[in-house]
Image (cartoon, rainbow, N blue to C red):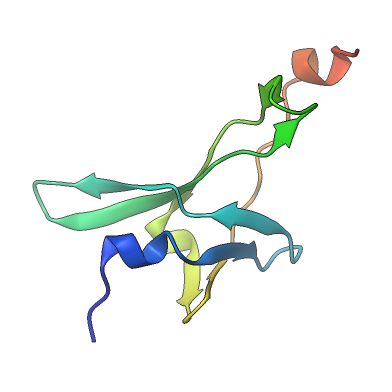
Length: 90
């Protein structure tokens, strides 16, 4: 059975490395020459309301372990935050 890209937006992405809920798929990267999905994109988390946001998570298709009815399980290493952002305070 096939699946549409629009259906991916309705699924929550969970990282199997730590059980963290990353969010919902907001976009996909597609190789238009080959017609295949390269990665899914999940928006980064917001901090301090709308003032700042972590970079988006771009999860390669090879990192997807399982696509279920409601959830996408991924094996993804979240990149460390940059030092300049960690030192910034309010």
